[in-house]
Length: 141
Image (tube, rainbow, N blue to C red; front, side, top):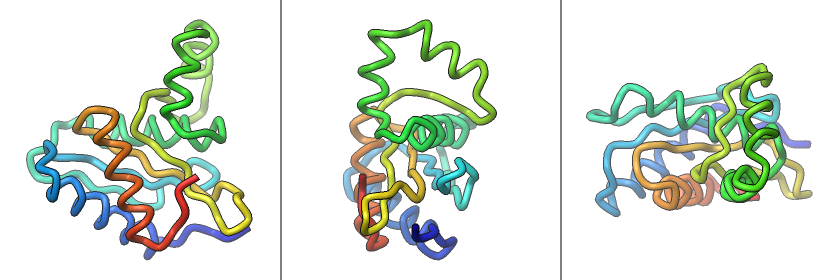
């Protein structure tokens, strides 16, 4: 398995924030975590509210923790709220199953991390992290 580097994470964030500006989205926070849900890099744009990084980290942590993009987790959480509430309460890292985080995979398809964003709608958050993953030359899982 390939490891996610700091340089890649920073490039991903730059690409995600560039996409947010190009689309005129509200100020964003973006967090990139590795396969162990540990923060590799994060950034909060000027004007973004105080909780943006916490929310982005929770989305990325949920995605990597469950091995699936947060859009699918949000759909599952609607059907099993007690289960997802229990995970959020017991997980050792932030866990927010809401749209806006995408897995980062290596060439073999193994998850090497996740990127999460917060500041816009879930669709906007997801859109910019995908743009950032692509801009960094990585693969969105």
